Length: 99
Image 1: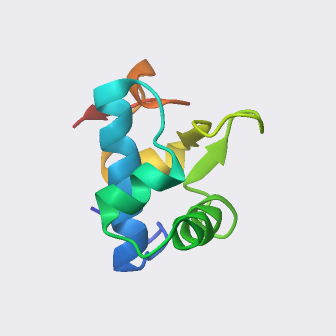
Image 2: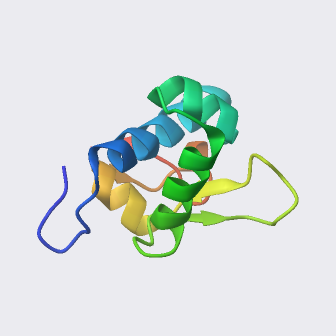
């Protein structure tokens, strides 16, 4: 649950952030844009890319580990805090453990 110090997200960005965290918890890697389109019922991979870029740049909730992989998305500490989760190696970057 977001707090006053954490960024406000659009419903679409919320779905994407949750989808990435859930995918990490299940498969131990990040989803591709195409998998995000399917999981979040988006209209195209460009919509997924645009919103992921917003979560990386303006929101600071995601980052890319390397630039070669389509599965390089990781949650930042702020992304984990937004989701109400703590550090653990299962979610990329810092991971996720339910509080």
